[in-house]
Image (cartoon, rainbow, N blue to C red; front, side, top):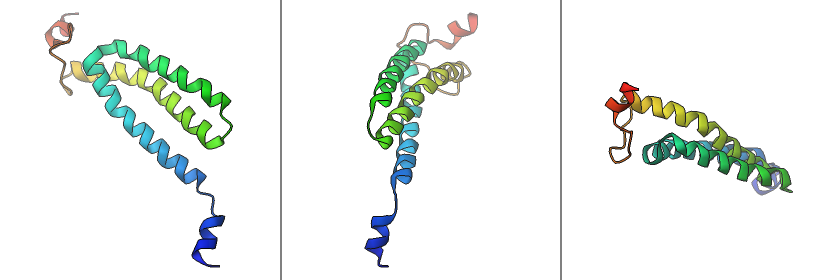
Length: 113
């Protein structure tokens, strides 16, 4: 068997879905950080809406790979809701910078609550 024949017989779907999942999850980390920085905890509603919007076509997709990637994206959005709350706590602890332009982002104000 030559290399081209082996390549044509190997199913790369799982490998590609895994790689895409890795990239999708990796993209959500900075989205949570930037979202919390600019919008605070209210960004969780955008993640909820986005998750629902990705979930609907997941159920309707003809391709297993497309459905899987849409599902990974949907549940990454849902997971980000939890991460936004944790990011707010990390900002409160001083591990990440607070946005000085956003009302209520002052660490002293948060500590007073």
